[in-house]
Amino acid sequence: MSKLYEEYKWSELVNDEVRKYRGSIREGSLLDEFLELAKEKKEKDPTVYIIDRSLLKEIVGCALTDGYKIQDQQARLEYCVNEHYSELPADIKDILKSISEDGIPQEKIYLDKILQMDSKSLEDFIDLYTQNIGTGYTFWSPSKTRIVIIRDDLFSGSDPLLKTIIHEYVHSTGKDSSDIFPMTYPMINDIIEKHIKPHDPRYKEYDYKKIKYLMLNLETTTELSAIYILQDSDLIEPIINRKEFLEKKLYQINQLKEKTGISKIPREDAILAYLVGHFIFEQKDKNDDIREISKKTNKIIEDVLRLYIKEVKNKSEKENRS
Image 1: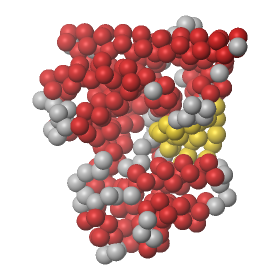
Image 2: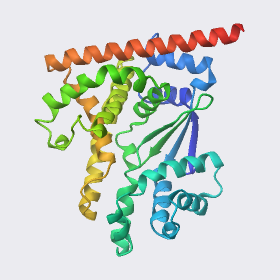
Image 3: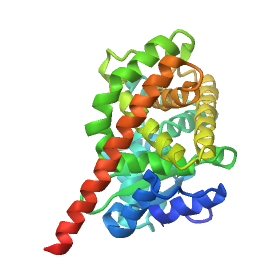
């Protein structure tokens, strides 16, 4: 990107991206209703910031080298953001500081090794942990919601932007965690145990009885919600692109792990959680068990999000009358 970041309104970006696919948004679909909501209530039309991953690499690299002498991690990140991007608005600097935390390894064994690394090993290490920073983030508040997308080189081949901004929008409603997840996670666990783990070694350690993996099912829930929203408007290509992007991202991470000798980074589990959603989407027409679960989860997603839209509209009408 020629600029350090790009800024859009969510509704504007969704419409722009749909046009790229030469698609249209079905009237009355969930996506159509969300766009209508965004038009009526500005707080339901989040600001989307697109930031290049190279910015974050600079901050992570600084925090692991020049800034390493600063003991407090928050102070260290603040120093590094100001050192490299002092000209940015305070809001953007706060976002950079927040998401760059994911690029700082928490394991002391790795932090201790940094001082002994040669320049090439250090570069690979910084590259790997910059990849631990996700592709999408949602910063929510009642009056202002911001969605942050981290763009990198993989966007040029399998652009996940449309699918990702819808995924993050679902997060912004809060309904994925409060309503959809509690009703869907037992069914998701069932699919993982019966249909994924026996055939995909990447899920060997994926145990829903452990709280970490149980909570990752929330990301599967949100991914399924975004898939359903796109499917509801017959926008299938963005779903395929997102899945291809996720697989390529795992491959990219694996290549960097081989270079550094590090066995795993936390982001891999999140990507596997997203891919569970894509497995369900792809297998629903091939397996009766998965088809039934897909129907049930889609019905839950549809009902919860329709009710959310109705409640927001009713609240808005009451506010306008008073």
